[in-house]
Image 1 (cartoon, rainbow, N blue to C red):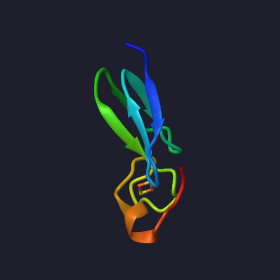
Image 2 (tube, rainbow, N blue to C red):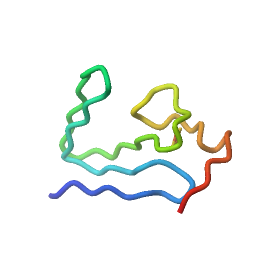
Image 3 (cartoon, protein in one colour):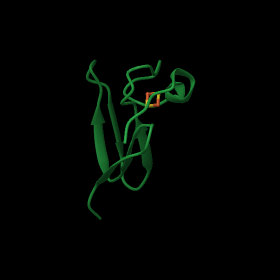
Image 4 (cartoon, rainbow, N blue to C red):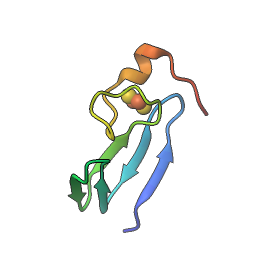
Length: 62
Ligand code: FES
């Protein structure tokens, strides 16, 4: 299965594995077949992952 990245309307990137995610500190999250949501609004407190803040700040994007 290939990795798939989708932009969710007014929300995060939805990434379906297998995938290896490396954050700014070099921490690695590696999974085979899970779905992850990555922040693209800039407001998450658990970057690079989405924590739902996009809803509270009214993030808008197609
Ligand atoms: S996209 Fe969800 S917190 Fe940023």
